[in-house]
Length: 165
Image (cartoon, rainbow, N blue to C red; front, side, top):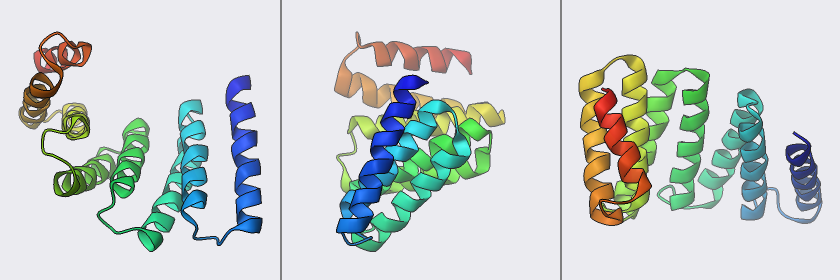
């Protein structure tokens, strides 16, 4: 926890300085909110992580194009927190928003798309909807085989996920 608290202190100092010297809607402020959220997420403090990710999203939606890849990343981060909290409905909503943006802005074979398919599959698996989970895990597998090759550890993990449903 000592490494996390040091990082958190540094990011909070950065945020304090940015808020004094930059416009409060500056993209760097959004990045720092995200970084603080990442630390809280790593510490398992879902409530604080969610607060900072929501602040990140609010600034990104004000300052970036709504289809910007950073917005998709923030949706994914928020979905991850809701998933960790066991709120499957909200996790699914944010992961679906992530996928929608990724399919608009990235190549359909992009590794991030495969990760999002996997995340959605995990939520359906947690919900006990194994048919939908399998569909998303199979899409993950297809993309990972295309982009990473058959010997990549992520492909092995995906085979494992398919086997578990």
